[in-house]
Amino acid sequence: MKALIALEDGTIFEGRSFTGAGEAIGEMVFNTSMSGYQEVLTDPSYTGQLVTMTYPLIGNYGINSEDMESAGVHPRAFLVKEYNAIPSNFRSEETLADFLKRFGVLGVEGFDTRALVRHIRQAGALKAVVSTEDLDPESLLAKAKGWAGLVGRDMVSQVTCEKPYGWADNQAVPGSSFTTTQQGLTDPLRVVAFDFGIKFNQSRILTDKGCQVQVVPATTSAADILAMNPDGIFLSNGPGDPAGVDGVVETVRELLGQKPMFGICLGHQILGLAYGATTYKLKFGHRGGNQPVKDLTTGRVEITSQNHGFCVDVDSLSPDDVELTHINLNDNSVEGMRHRKFPAFSVQYHPEHAPGPHDAMYLFDRFIELMRAA
Image (cartoon, rainbow, N blue to C red):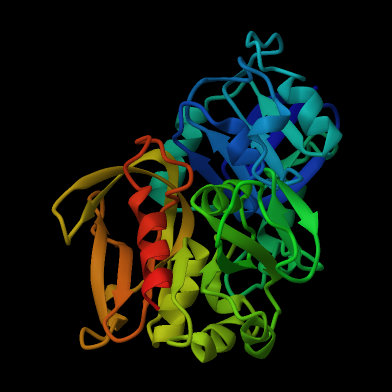
């Protein structure tokens, strides 16, 4: 089935759908990971985006229930050079096409993804439409230009949980307090995790390291958090512009210094805004499993997984209050920071994805050390 991809600057690509009819509008981005497409699809940080994979063959190992990072699929469309309809892997439970169809996400193949990625690298992330239903380039162009985009919008409200829940035995457990304990945990540390678009593996790692995790909606007040008497507060990843998330920065600022805090990705950006810094939109973002990051405190280089289109402005950080701890070696952007006065630190990348595979696990250990020392 023929599909057209129209970018807001008038660039058109022609491909074909491998999931049937559909139309999707969003921000066109690319991911450079060679594997992990299921983790990409189920990462809430991709809400509002159309994702193109740079690796040419996608779908070859299928989909399985164990590798989900959330309960659903979040990109609005998934674009690949070549789709493999016959997966070969002992863990596979369904094909990629069936998975996308189940969640109503358009899948497109059969076009030059290299040309699209090169165009985005030069022009920046662009608003776009992918459609099998409307094949008029001018109509699609008008739709792309008319879309509101991500800047200034609260995308977290689309992915955060409606009610608090716990995490035990490798699954979410309904509940509004620390009432569920992972089997085998003794004297667990109590962590309240803000759900800005949290990934399952973040809760999984914290639990595996001896924490009792309570996930709460992004709108939860500072008073309600403190009433739970946690040992620490975790700020998760999430989609979109951190400056557009309503009320959260003020909540985090109110909590700052009262409990140890650890932020990842959007949580890192929100923590930066709470410090008084500013954020800005990157030209085409960092998305993939091979981003080199230098730990300025040790000199070590980590191979990291990343997925973000916004970044903390290093020039807006107060050197008296905040220490820069990590930088991206591709563009020297901020990848990590910690507060000099309060027990709070954060990283822009995703240590829970661990392409290293263990390069960044020390960050979770650092959080635990802060909580035990508090």
